[in-house]
Length: 164
Image (cartoon, rainbow, N blue to C red; front, side):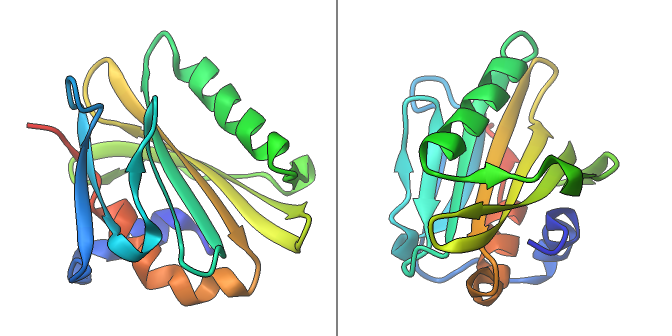
């Protein structure tokens, strides 16, 4: 994952992908938008959006949370990873300090882990979109194969904006 914060900060220097879908979510009362390449088959979920790279090397989702639900949403993200066979090595946890992307505060937790195919990178990004709303972005990438998607991931993370 190579420090997703650094990737996000560099995203402003990359043009948006030509074939991409911008999703405002949740659709009933949007709090944020994100642009995900069409080839990742982006879709709105019950609590946010998700997409997977065409080669399945990277999975990324963004789920809406409030100050009251942030722990539950984070727990749900970890449960999702566990149900999909991802184990996280807690000794590898890296925390990044709070930074800003598109005027929003963001911080990350990153780990090394494993899934049925081998070593993976796992990350949870916390993006404060407004006073009471935030996004929990889940990243799961196959070590080695994920590297070819660094530019796309930079662009996706850099595209997150508060809804207007």
